[in-house]
Amino acid sequence: MSDDPLIGRRLANFRIERPLGRGGMAQVYYGQDIKLNRAVAIKVIDTRYRDNPTYAQRFVREAQTIANWHHENIIQIYYADVEDGLYYYAMEYIDSDLEKLLAQAKVNDERLPYDEVLHIGRSVAAALDYAHSRKVVHRDVKPSNILIDPEWRVVLTDFGLALEVENGTRGEAVGSPHYLAPEQAHSSAAAVPQSDLYALGIILYQMLTGRVPFTDSSAMAVAVQHVKATVPQPRQFNPSLNRATEAVLLKALSKKPEDRYPTGRALMEALEAALFEGEEPTVASADPPVRTATKPAVRTTPRPLLYIGLGAVLAALLVIFLAGLVIMMMLSRGDDETVGTEQAANPQTPVVIETAPPTSLATEAGPSDSAGGITETPPVIEPTPSATLVITPTAEPAPEILADTGTDFSGEQNRPWRYTWSPPGTADWQPMKYEQRQYGLCWYAEDYIRICPDSAHPGNGAAVAWYWTSPSAGPLEIRLIANKKDLGGDGVVIAVYYNTLDTANSTPIFQRVLTGTDQTGFSDQVTLANVEPGDSILIMIGHNGNALSDHTLFRARVCRNYCP
Image (tube, rainbow, N blue to C red; front, side):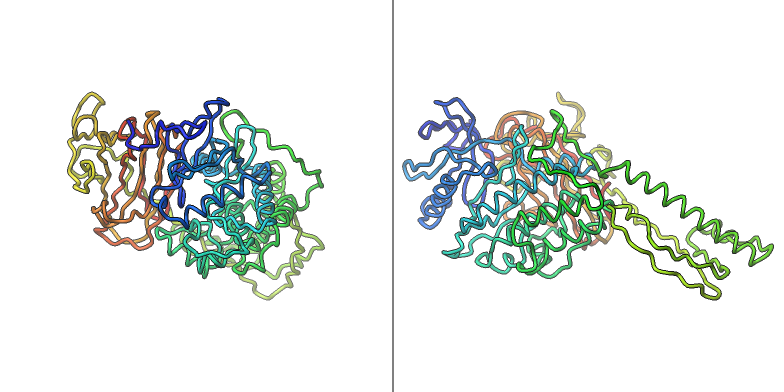
């Protein structure tokens, strides 16, 4: 049985069955409307704030405001009440969200296709424009608050941080750091409608490139980047984007609110025009994209046939051009046959080719941009005496996997990981034993507490962890992939701690919660910029409230440069 006193409790027509997650000031549960026989999500004010009248009023205000709205892209509230000092409301239940969709795409090393990006973006933009027209700023727009139902209806939820612009705010909460507008990083009271549109811009950037623009192990450092750092060029992470799309994303992420798009609709109209710039105009469809039953129709490069054709033409032109240069070089240098021999012996040696003065390469029109259709006129290249072409080979830094919980699983003394566990309610980390038991050759503690090559079970209220010590200095990336194996219970907590074993009193640099039925799970990464030799990483799996059914599929990698 769960130690949560609300599990099994009935509030009006609604029976609370299991927790779904925790927001800024509330707990959300899965429940059943026993009269209408339908699933619901039940939001209950958190125990920390039940005796605080300010938070209670804010909670009630959220329910009253959203319950009177009628928009297909905003969560629908069915009922709200207070019972024995317990404020709650029941709303429609939608099982999936954009965060899960993006995690699945990342696991498959894919990006969402343009039709899905536009459908999600238009839906969120419409919801935000509706809220802004009613003087409400959401302040916490992020993928986990964008729900997607089986019919591909997109719904914005969790207005718990919503700000009524006319009344101002005390500034207790500022939103999620990766989607935080610069003005919100200074003060939550500075949030304006364009702050929400900045967050939408981050989400569009993430859907089109596969990552958010600013990352760091510290939430404060991410907030500072939003305020001061230049947004990385989207084409750096997705070269298939055209320059017009890049310009739209960068405008949406302008540091000053007045430099962004005035409405969500204006942003999405600009993005759609940019994505398909140079193509035949089509009539925009209001219908959601067609999807397969289980796997999203994702692709890494939109409109591949067009780009394959353009790429082939450009490649042929490049070969002809280089062949001409080689012929001219041979004519100008006679029987000199030494060109390229030093490069063959040492591929990192720059190749210097002296050419005869070329004829004019001026043209009136250039080829289409291979990433999206921008037509540019190349400059006229005038002949210059003794022109020199210098080609210096460059190499991308290769990823180096330093430790992998799957492939490095071993009982040997020189293994990179140390397997440890902590009894319930403590941070007393103790070694585990590598032996053969009922679950196979794994690392065990008491009873069924174990770490196996592809999974772990904290069991009996304990926690288990992988401990790793860095052998060298430099930046590192930690890649984490997890989902529930046992279905049931209230899920597990996965957290990463840096240079500490005092998990009871320390803040993790990363934390995610898997619900009891979360078979989709997540794939995420943590970046550490300056790791010194001897620095440690502890990756922990612990229970929530209920220690039952916590068997979790899990894999982690520690890499230099980046994790493949």
